[in-house]
Image (tube, rainbow, N blue to C red):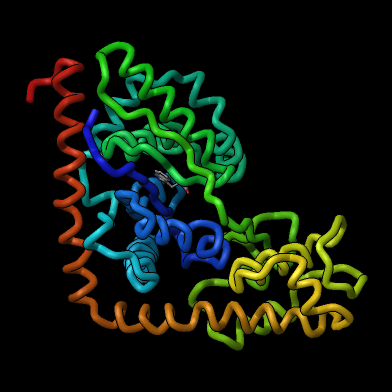
Length: 333
Ligand code: TRP
């Protein structure tokens, strides 16, 4: 195990579409803050994971570059943080293969995401979908990560990464840091604006339910004005008011106001005033990032140079772990 002074955080993002407001408020914004909080951050775009579901090739490439530019626009600092594209660091695939051989069929069959995704994509239940957690374990273990910030849906994958690490360490002696899931302090869980019982998602069929981080102000305003609420009119957090609760959560996350403050601010005002106020706050939050984003994507050469330069940085870290693993299991290095 490596002797690092700072605790290492590792996170990766799938880039199969434009990030949503949910990705932004629930994860990305908090992860970017962690670089200022004394952690050693390693972040990447999980394009290999994206292949477990059939992608349009040009689309995947486009979304990957856009996602890269978006994180830079948010202020990801390459002096502090390593930020690369997974497929440009071949050690991920190499370690994933080895970990496949240390993971049981039964364990992988119990993964809820596998069960959900194979029900959803019944015509393409490929081996990659099944061994997805081994690739994710490789992502984490290669960098000897201490913490992996994840939402509830990925917690089981961090747990299996821990199990694999402990099993391997048990057989061969200390090799991997056993990672811990990190549940972010301020991680907002943003729900669909059209169906506040399900999470906001880029794959939502109803595009009015999700706000993309690249939506223009008029689109954001229109989507918030159409957001599903309930038959009441009081801006108050409560049971049966999932739509309003979600809007309050978004407003709170963006403005930093507490629910009590929001209730006071909109006392007697109704949804008709609250919805556009949430939209305005979101527009103001995204505007400066969208401006920087547009400058970055316009400079293709800069963007390409930047992500290419990150791959060797990641490879250097990853190879140390991979070489150790190869030696331990008996491969010739
Ligand atoms: N599976 C994660 C998701 O869909 C993405 C991911 C891939 C990841 N590798 C990772 C997250 C390693 C954390 C750590 O959101």
